[in-house]
Length: 252
Length: 289
Image 1: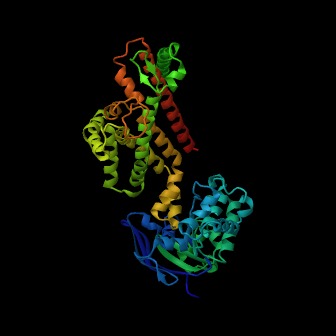
Image 2 (image 1 turned 90 degrees about the vertical axis):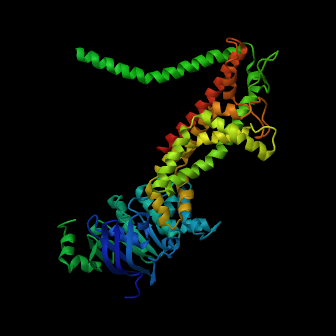
Image 3 (image 1 turned 60 degrees about the horizontal axis):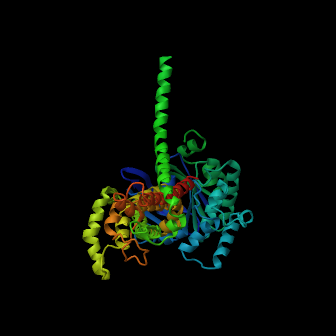
């Protein structure tokens, strides 16, 4: 395998006395979709939030171990969070567009990172909307509030908002759990397209979704990475009996 | 049978208590109107609203309310200009930055500020602030519109801070996370996402702050110098509508034009307060949608 995009080494995370992640080691390949599955509370969202260090918003969170992004340790205190979060973007469970216009939502990241100014901004807005298939339906309504869109469009907009800052990695925390099946299918299709250019890590509750969209899958249970392998292998010939039990629906 | 009567009686009593406040407001308004409008039997409305001289006991008397309205406006505007930035900053600090004891201490401090009787603030304004202002700007007197504005800003702050803080707290956590996860700094998150999201609530807070300030009487009467002239600068003494009513009501002969004129000022004040409250309500209502 080529150099991994993200390399996790002996990662531990605790919230106060609660040990959320236990000695996780894994490598995430570039331009692939990596899915993390596991029952509620297994630590998959916590793991995702280690990559962009969003756990640090929680006062008692403590992380040890290393995470390398292109070989560079991003868990150091000296790591600039602003740049890190520009390179590693995140899509949340509930679509959370800002209560601003569609245009301003997309321009937000461009403005805070000073990636462009003046007439270049509308261009970036157009490109990002095109990338998520929203340009045609929305191009005449850019000044409208983003909160008026349907949930699916809101989630696409949130993805477009990320793409506007040219990230390298997209973290998706159950991006379809607020959507209906048709909208889910559309967003999955979008994920499929996006992996040509981005490294995607997706957390999902839905095992069919993991099987459909991902190239590699990790199974987490009570903060431990039980098994991590090619998706095909995990779903057809899991090595660990706990993985098999979970994917065949015996618990979770 | 007895039970049914009792239920009805209790229900009616509760309903009547609920209606009581509305009835009182209506009665006060009617009384104000009756006494205030009596002025216009002898003094034309244009002389009252457009007149630039308030000489109620000269001969002939002049009831031009313009200097008083402008006096109130200058003092209020000054207070709001001073209070709003500081209040929004405090609310941001309390809701987003401070944690633990600092947060509690600040909240308590601001509540205590609201608990200081206005006469005490007026007293401090007279004894401490006015001499400073006199010295600082080399004025003949420190009792000016600015002095009033500063004292009133202190009185408006608790209202504005606490309502703004509520508005900030009501902004969903998802917005904050989304902004930070995009690489925004804390200040960018607050200025570009949080404040716009909380804007209706903040506007309502400002409206209620203005309402608090424009109706205040005792402190302004003590520190603004009470000269009923059209203000040309904030470093001049001014007289507000509230101070005029409070100062002159005791001396006005009941049933005289002077007496009616003071009620007419009351109508103007009532109308302004009513509009401010209605605007605040509108903003708060808008926020809920």
